[in-house]
Length: 185
Image (cartoon, rainbow, N blue to C red):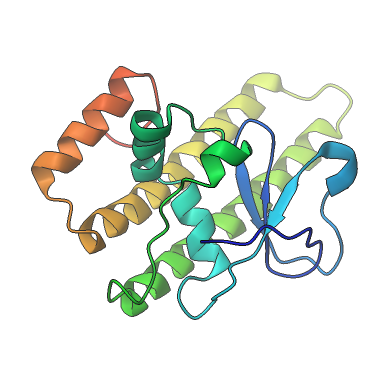
């Protein structure tokens, strides 16, 4: 299990009310945790699962499906949901190579996020910025990042031994419940 800590320094996962989770490696607090009521967590056993991989897992379609079916919520901010999450680790599975792939994909996603944020700031800092152009850039960005997230999902499916049939059932369930997944709709 993962110990919740009020950490505001390096290599932290922030979980917001509603369940959104983000990874940060800042030297200073990214958010005022107390004011916003944000949970900050860090893996107690980084040799088993890094914070980047844990963040990827918290955002994976597999965990969303599990949480909706077993916990009836994807709001990981709620203690009753968070306490019942099942987190994979290196002891049970041979994740080393796969963890490295996931961490590499997370790094790419972070770079893409920084890039789009810089573009957004540049666009909206203009007096009469083109909202349509902004929307096009954001949609293109979301499509790129979704492709990387889908690669991460597929790594989790493979490592956890989920075959194509079960994967298809999971993806169909999520799409039926209007949860966006990369690829064909």
